[in-house]
Image (cartoon, rainbow, N blue to C red; front, side):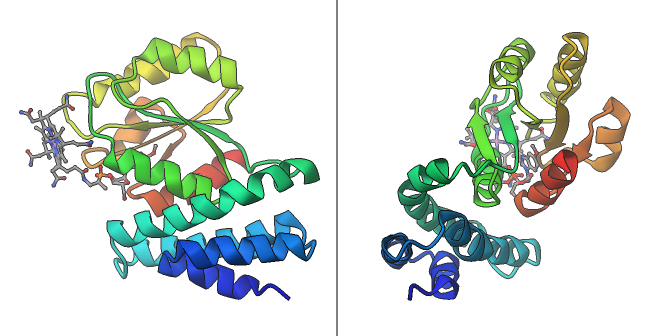
Amino acid sequence: MADLKALADAVIRGDQNTAVEITKAALAESMPAKSVLDEGLIAGMDVIGARFKKNEVYIPEVLIAARAMKMAMAILEPELAKEGVEPLGKCLIGTVQGDLHDIGKNLVAMMLKGAGFQVVDLGVDVEPEKFVEQVKAANAHVVGLSALLTTTMPGMEKTLKALRDAGASVKVMIGGAPVTQDYADRIGADGYAADAASAVDVAKSLVA
Ligand code: B1M
């Protein structure tokens, strides 16, 4: 019988070949895709997230684990769809207008996917109007805004205002090196996270 603990360990090690192999074996044995996801892939990414928060692993390890998860997810996704498994929620994420930094934002997107969210990544230099348009089109539950420059942080407030003015009932989470909880409170964001693993906790609390 396919070993889901070994699948989680493969994700933690970033061993994509083993992750894919065990995922295929589990599906061939008619194991529910949801169990493979929860007990294998998400369990592995949860461990990586917790270790990243404690500085026990660093960005390269997270990226390698996320790549292993992505490869296995490509096999699992059609089966999840057949089982009618719903994602935890739909997140739109982007770096705000004028800002081209995307390494942290990409990590957050990967960790959210790893936790079971459906993620639409709008990229960098995203103007407020685009967030509004895409939130409506995607019917998103959470919008994630990233900024790395003190000069682009006001783009977060502008985007929040544009979303509120458009009547979008979406939760807004912000983050990035110069961003703080105090700033999030000041502009009225629903959530703030200091790192990619905490962003998962915040997003979960926002859709709970
Ligand atoms: Co730029 N840059 N950069 N840069 N850059 C910084 C940010 C800077 C601090 C460097 C410095 O001066 N010491 C400085 C900003 C100063 C300030 O505003 N206070 C700076 C500057 C000034 C600039 C330019 C203006 C330089 C110039 O051209 N004169 C220019 C601006 C371009 C623009 O955006 N319009 C610029 C350009 C660039 C590059 C293109 C060369 C490159 C970006 C490449 C890319 O992203 N594809 C770059 C880089 C790499 C950096 C540094 C070196 C590294 C940033 C990074 O990726 N960190 C950075 C200095 C530094 O941090 N040491 C610097 C790693 C990443 C994983 O961390 O993004 O913080 P971070 O993400 C974390 C958390 O913040 C959080 O989770 C992530 C993972 O834990 N997080 C979220 C991030 N987004 C989140 C969203 C959430 C929740 C959590 O919810 C939605």
